[in-house]
Amino acid sequence: MSFKTLRDFDVRGKTVLLRADLNVPVDASRNVTDTTRIDRVKPTVEYLVAQGAKTLILAHFGRPKGARNAAYSLSFLPPVLQARWGVDVVFADDCVGGPVQAMADSLKSGQVALLENVRFHAGEEQNDRVFARALAENGDIFINDAFSAAHRAHASTEGLAHLLPTGAGFLMAAELDALNAALEHPQKPVMAIAGGSKISSKLSLLKNLVKKVDYLALGGGMATTFLYAQGHEVGQSLCEPDMADEARAIMAEARACGCEILLPPDRVIVKEFGKNAPHESVSSSAIPADREAVDVGPETIRFLSGKMEGCKTVLWNGPLGVFEVTPFDTGTNELARTVAGLTKAGKIVSIAGGGDTVAALENAGVVQDFTYVSTAGGAFLEWLEGKPLPGVAALSAQPKAA
Image (cartoon, rainbow, N blue to C red; front, side, top):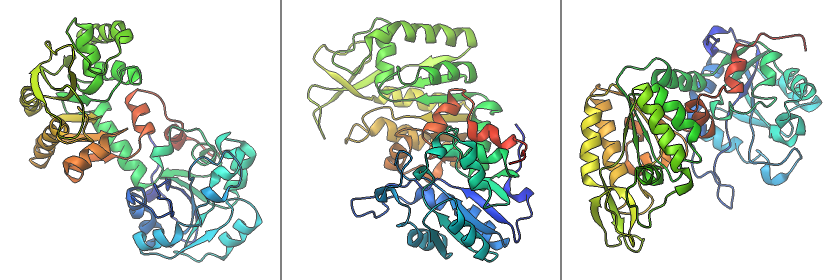
């Protein structure tokens, strides 16, 4: 698809409505515990400030269910934004109406304002045209930099694009470039690594991936279900026996598409799970009835690392074991470091994201070493599933009369 980006607009003196994802994690005292989402929108904000735009930031926080709720107010964020971005940020206690218009009129070129939670209005999640028009009245240009909210057809992610000249912010453009490089026009061969507990939650993902990649490596409970579907003993391992037919159908589809599904040849097993619990590695086809698989084994690590050596693109979604508990993060850590090393050597393009993936790669200490790591969660997964994302599709919309 073709769309404009921020650089395609002359924003000097213009009021820009910037949709950002500032739905950050906080502790009980409302201290931000992870500033990643704030940091990633910084280049867009810096550019708007440097170019002399008047920037009004639209964002959501939590699920206030269409009503004003102090527990979900964004009023705590301006000091954090100022500290992370190095610019002054004023706050408006609503996102539509006269006070917001007055603030927009009072802003000088290069100034930034954060508007109150768009989800305080029911019209946001309903993608109500009247509410979208009320948002649009405050701006001249709409820039969407919230790929992580692009799978939602909301007023501030989709509706606005039909009312104002629209473009992608730098983070949105980077996400789309990375995903395009991973799935739409990748350097081949392509390996996808898919981990996690259940195939039932990732059926669409797996069905789409086998049509797109050369190798699909499975870990976690998903791998167990596929092994069970092949008739192997899986002991007490997390498994979905009722999904065996689906697993066999995916394997048949993979063969038809020329995709090789890579299942772990060995697993790390325990009798009683816990940190540093006694464990051993056994063949994936011979897990004792009273044992549980909690990670991939050393043979699997060597096997998958060898396959990666012959690839040009690696796409990663989900851990391969119970990475939250030592030492059952070994498989995920070792393979993540292999991907990171190949990336730094210029041998592969590596794209990761969705679910627990970012946390797993942070645990391995390699987040900065992948080509691109998405924090988008649901939007990243829906893209991998081949689903159209309303907020992305709307980037190509032509503004209509409000």
